[in-house]
Length: 127
Image 1 (cartoon, rainbow, N blue to C red):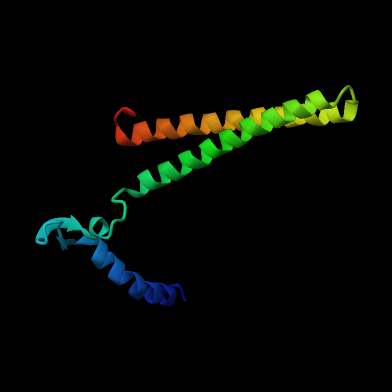
Image 2 (tube, helix red, strand yellow):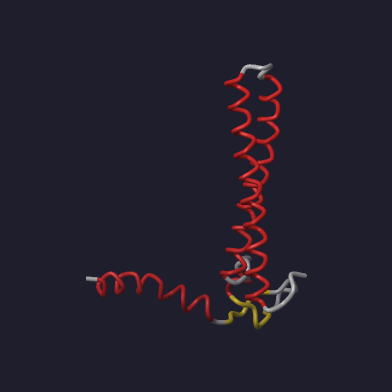
C-alpha cells in the first residue's frame, strides 16, 4: 500500500529531481549563452539551502510575534490607564500586560536559540 503511493509520487517528482540537479545553458545579457548556471538561477528562484529558507521563515515569524507582543503591551497599558480604578478592567489589563511580556520573552528566546543553532550548524560566527 505504501509502495503504491510512493510509486505514484515518485513519477511526479522525477522531473523535478532531474531538472533541479543539473546545470543548464542559460542566455546571458549579451545575447549569447552562458554555461554553469543552475536551473534555479536561470528561472530567477533563490539558490539557498533548505536550512536558510527555514531560518529566514522562522526568524520572520518570531520577529512578527515580538512586534505583536509589544503592540499588545502598549494597548494593555492604555487599557490600564482607562480603567480608572475599576478593579475588573484593571485586572484584565494587568493580565494582558503579563501575557504580552511572555510573548516578547518567547520571541527573544526563540531568536537567540535559532541564532545559536545556526552558528553551531555552520561552525562559524553569525557575521
